[in-house]
Length: 397
Image (cartoon, rainbow, N blue to C red; front, side):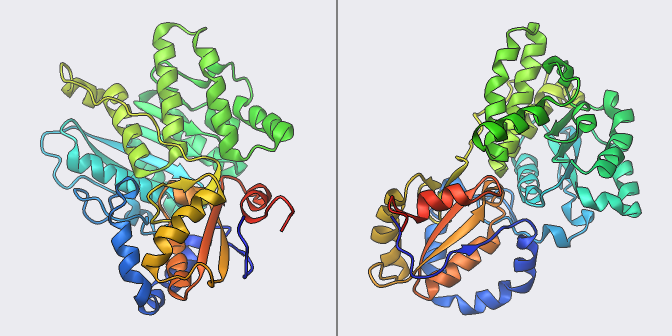
C-alpha cells in the first residue's frame, strides 16, 4: 500500500473548478516549467483521453477548459459555422454540475466538424441561473426553438417548477426530451419516441425510490446507484411492445452515455438522438446508412487516476505503483524512493467530463517540486471507502 509522507489533500470539486481556474492558471504556468515538457509530451500521446476544445477537427489533450461557472450562457452557446445543406437541430440543456458544459461543447463541435448527416446547435444553463429573470426569459426563448431538451439533477423544488412550466407545454412538439435523475414532475417530461416514464410504471419516482433503497442496502454512491438501476431496466423491456422496447433501449443508452460524461459519450448520444428521433434529420437521412451506435464508455465508481497514464484508471495501488514508479517518475525527474507521497481526493464527474484542468495543474505543480502523487476519486461524496482501500494497508497504516 501507499506510505504517505504528507497529508492527503481533499478536492471536493463542486464549486472548486472555477475558483482554481480563475485564480491560478497564469501563476502555475510560470512556476511549473521543469514539469511541463514531459507532462505535455506524455499527454499528447494518450489518444483515448483526447478531446476537442479549440479545433474541432483535431484531438487535443485532456482538460475541459473550465471556467463554466464564471461565464454566461452566450459563452456556452455553440452554433455550426458551416452547416451547408445539413439539417441543424437545436439542443437546450439544464444541468446542476458545470462540468458537463465542456463535454457538451466538445461533442457538438465534433459532430459539426465531422458529420455528413447533421449539425447541432446547443446552449446550456446552470440550474441556479434560472433564478435570474433575464436568464429565465432567454431559456424560454431557446426552448421555443429547441428540438431536444436535456435536464439533469434538477432537485430544487422551485427551480424544478420553473423548468416544468417552460418545457411541459412544448414537450409534445419536441423530438426528444431527456431528463436524468430529477424531481418526479421533471422526470415525467421524459419522451424518447414512444417511451415515457409511464413505461416503467412510475406513479411517483421510480428513480428516487430505487436510489433511496440502494443507499440503505449497500451504501451505493449516486452514480453507482444509477448504473445498478440501468441494469434492472432490461427486465422491464420484455413486457413492452417491440417499438416501445426499442425506444426504451434508446433511453437507457442515452442514460449510460450521460453517466459516462466524456465528449465521446455525449457525441454518441447526440448522434443517436439526431438520426433516430429528430424529424428533419430522419427525413434527410432516409435511405442512408446510419452511424452505428458504440457502447458507452463508463469508468468504475472509484479508482486511482493520473492524467498521463496509458490506462485511464487503475484498480489497485499495486498496478498504479508499477506504472508510476517505473515509467512516469523517471521521465518526470522524481525519485520514488525518496520523494514525499501526496494523496489527492478527486471527484469523478470532473474526470468523466474531462473538465480536469485544475486537477492537472495541481498534479503538475506537485510533481515539479519532486513529489509522488496518488490521485483517487469517487462517484459520490463519501470518500471513506476509496481512502481506506487505496491509502491504507490491511493493518490500517
